[in-house]
Image 1 (cartoon, rainbow, N blue to C red):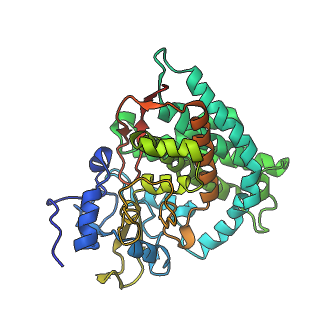
Image 2 (cartoon, rainbow, N blue to C red):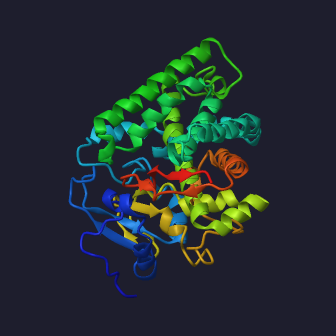
Image 3 (cartoon, rainbow, N blue to C red):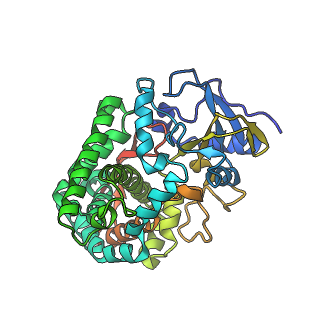
Length: 414
């Protein structure tokens, strides 16, 4: 097998790289030449005291790492693959209280509690309210557009439904959704200088969410309501969450539920408007397969990481205990061994075993059903009210080491 011909110092978690593009050509090269490849990093520049990580690019290998938590820990170094050099180890350790960064059996205990709020019945109960909210969001975007009909799709449409869904799910007053948006932005955008956010500001935002959520939990304990918060925090000690555990769960919702879904919606709209035949097909037939293809195409989380708990092997490559292992969902979702014509946006793709909701295993996305519902509802509303929407500018991408984010997408109604 030939060696990959990547430039010296090339790093798949370089935020400058991901601000410009997702490195699909380089992923293709690795899948063909070195599907598990060592990426060297200068010690101390990424928040971790090591000299790099393994890049895992094939669909099968990403699934293998994801489904073997006994070999690959989410807790040791957290699931976030890169921080900036100013973060302290204590700040990284604090993030282990979030379910995303737990291993079994603690992860199993917490997930069994919080999944009560994500049953099919619970999600169905939100559908009518969210359908009405989706229509209102699109109508408001039209009403607030500039005189020439233009507006920013991200801030006027994409951000709103995920925020309102979270607010609806956990009983946050709708007027407080802007707080959740602001706090989650600060937590996720620390690498983007446009936001001028430091690690300290991100940590403060996380604590703001925890404090807000703990107060919400305390209020529900004192006066229960017919919502998920009351179900999750009632009778602490009897298989429920403590107030601080609920706070860290809301952090996960704010970032994993809000940031990822809004970016899937934005990338989906861009994909439709750059593939007009797919937009015409969607408007005409509304195929149920569309949401899954949008998530595959968008892959909002480029990568997470795990840390090897013992000497092991992935894809024929020996991995040492303590090595960090990057699982690159963006690469796996374009693996031609799994997807026919992977670089084609095809909303009728079926089957579609993408890893946009994770590679299976204990960390498979708890909110998948809610995300699919939101995507279906918002694109139905857009197709009904803005069938002739068009692009007026290229997307402005987020500078991030692991999120495939878009800050701005200028569009105009026809």
